[in-house]
Length: 134
Image 1 (tube, rainbow, N blue to C red):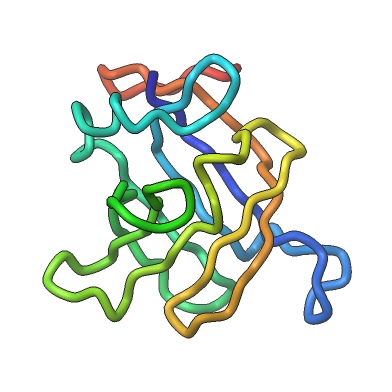
Image 2: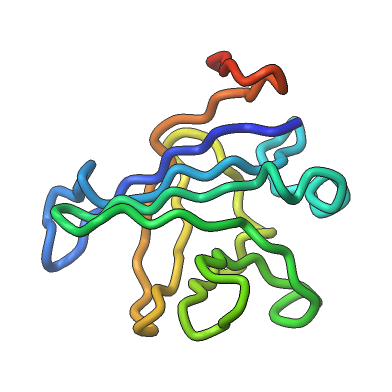
């Protein structure tokens, strides 16, 4: 089932309290326990979108992509431009982390900086376009 997941930047040296102005909104297939589901991703990959919001910078939009290779035999990345890999952002072992409010995940930006995010919200996505809270 597809879910809309909002991630906010967790506490770090630059933002000791974290930041709700820095993060991601990701539409992703999650199983009932909150783990990413590769099989459903293959069926609905064009719906698995990502919106990056980063303070005063312009928002970026892309796709959540599951690729062979990486830790555990596969990796999840954010692909902003399908013609290039230089702008991709890699999730750190995202298949091992639960996407439930309060949990933490890490994403490496396109400048190779690793950032930790806290899962703020998770909502089921109604395929007709509406979302429902869970």
